[in-house]
Image (cartoon, rainbow, N blue to C red; front, side, top):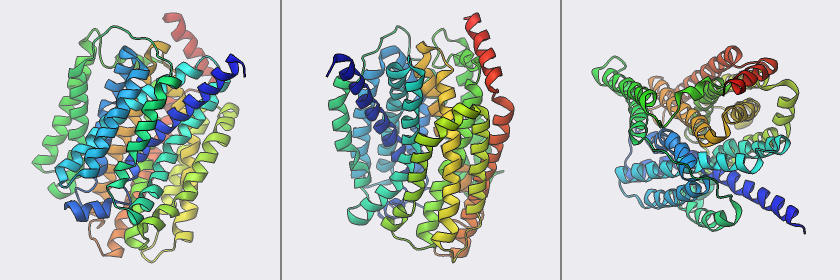
Length: 477
């Protein structure tokens, strides 16, 4: 085999590791879904606070992604990729060994911090490996993109298998051998990348992470404390102050965590809004669909995970085979808008689920429609958000788009949890009330998807306009 063939083969093995990393960090948001009732019983979580097993991971993940992207640009993508795996491994051990609520949440937050280092550096490495060949880049992004929702849905199945036949701590311990394999493979497969001078802007990272965490906490607490209560209003005001401080800090620093001018890049801001609202609609769907399968239809952990396998398969096939071809033919804007509309239709269909429903009637067809919408919208919006930035800001662009999706997921889930609770989803054992709450969450998520479609239709540019804007931006650099 020639050196060229060996290099090409190693590049695709590197892509496999990058896709596995994306699969893992997203799987860790969902693998706990089926295990939540067992975790709740063993550690004593209340129904209202149970979503924090998810949110502790996602808030740390989303809040630190910008810092992870910056560190990837400054210290080298390969170095941060390996560091992220080490941190994820440590958090997984803590979360699996937890015997108290605060230890569990700490472990989940550490896992999220590791994921925040892995995700942007993985995208940067992908661009380093394939960015010079547009045709190969499209294939690489399709594989990478399919790994995200596939990891989210496959996590539910794996969580079911593990919870049913082992015990819930193993939904965290499963990360350990995978992390060890990744750490062994990284030096041989990944390019080293450049190291640049600059500061890390810890103040920016602290204010944005704290602001997002406070916002999510206030929304989750609102149904119990009251939307007009002093606690809820104070929490939301504090979140606005912290996020406003973050923007002020970014505008004044010579080396900010986020160069605010990057949002003037054609298509980047619009694509990130699409990713934010896509996450805000998709993640509540699988969270409440899993609750419906277990707590209303009465499926066990393994059966519940298996019930979502058709959705996983559909997403993988559509993202890898169908979505790139349709995007090449019709362009980004029609695909994103159509995908979000189809996702909304699937969510609306799921909202019709009955307390005495049937999987084949109430779940399977609607979940496949939702999966189709997700697959159509995810790839073009992700690729646009990443490819719009300058090469030297690849880590930053990766961090921004991952942040958009994860924070959309956290805020969407927090809001839909509050909405579902107000319609009775917190009344365990009452199938009618649970179904009413879950249906309300599906309708709310459908509204998020519709809003995403409308905003994408207005903000995303058509193919000709995008090319012209990019040419103007290049001329100004």
